[in-house]
Image 1 (tube, rainbow, N blue to C red):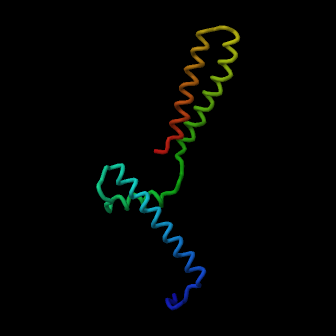
Image 2: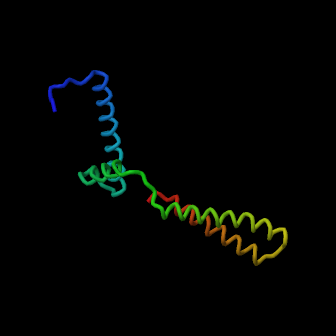
Image 3: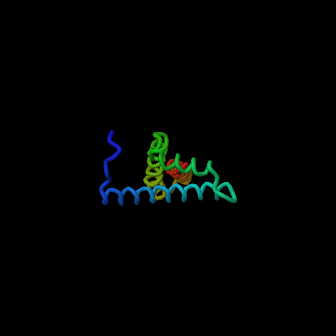
Length: 115
């Protein structure tokens, strides 16, 4: 590869902007990591963790998608069943549907949790 190739001025400006933005993102994430550990200063491990987080693809595990799907289904069953049984006046079934709704919402929020 020819190392004497010149960089276009526009390309150089864009490259510098990307480098500054990436460095700022690393610094911000490193500060967050240091803050979480109540550290007085940003350590190398904070920077390494920040780089890992930035380079990690933002994939959601299939288990989280499953939790959201099952939780949504349970919450949907709660809505339909609760309204039906409320008009029929059956307190035991109303209680069961409320429990299904609570479990469904718990599963949805567990699936949406970022950790």
